Amino acid sequence: MNVLVIDNIDSFVYNLVQYVGILGGNPIVVRNTTDLDRINEIIKKEKVTRIIISPGPKTPEDAGISNRIIENFGRRIPTLGICLGHQCIAHVFGGKIRRARTLKHGKISLIEHNDKGILKGISNPLEAVRYHSLVVDDETLPDSLEVTAKSLDDDEIMGLKHKKYEI
Image (tube, rainbow, N blue to C red; front, side, top):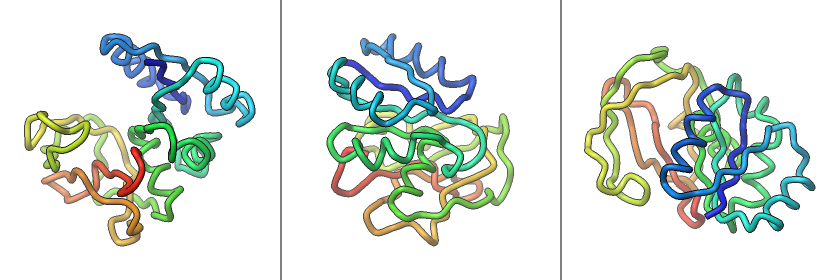
């Protein structure tokens, strides 16, 4: 399984790359500054079957090619967004991003989830370390997306999925 990993210029991306390898995938890392034509070439040549949009600093508007990748490939290639990548998914489908109610940098929270899809079989609630100050605004979540996980301590969206596509 060839997995395209979009590097939003974050040190955590190589942890993801290692996990993809451990799980039997072949990670193909490209920077968020890569143009869409080159991304398309890579997807075709390498027969990419999954896409991961990595964490990164700032907001979806600052995530380089990440939003365009979701727009152009998310409907046909299963796509996972983590942190900034998760925010990009909400942004692409019409959601807004806002400051978190409380900043969470290196803080542990219990996350309650729906026990479906990639969350199936994971302890529930799950204990997770959070590193973010921005979140998807639950009041602007578009109808096309559904919440799959929320933090128990501050009721922030921690997971979402598209209702029709594997995003």
